[in-house]
Length: 182
View 1 (cartoon, rainbow, N blue to C red):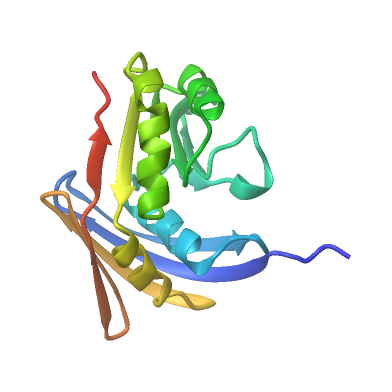
View 2: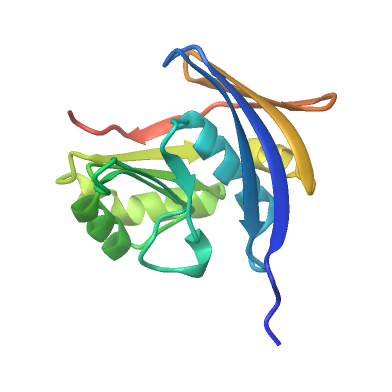
């Protein structure tokens, strides 16, 4: 018998001083049985970093043809494709063909570095691709914040991210490994 997803209720308050975006999102997030708390929290940070009224969580890990997060236009065109982890070069290539902008948030320390060394040369042709690495110690600390009901405050300023839940605070410094070319 297949395990079911675990449902998380998240109130995500985003104060992004870099983009002048200030909004609270009430999210119901399904955590796939194979998904770790670390990945769930990276997904929420990625959502906060790209927060927009049309940004949505997708089926993500349970399907190959959808990103973890996407933003579609009112005419249903893919504007933003957000992938987490270490996608294959093929998936990166396909997603860059499907969406106006693609952001990969990789994490996992040494494994992420090995992944990037392997695919970075094949990604230079994708002007719409951005690759952001999240430090392993910081994502481990984020995982400690996970609970079935969360009130998260995410403050973003000068590229720095502060995530707070209750009395706990985690600082995340995203590292730009590849910038998109406008």
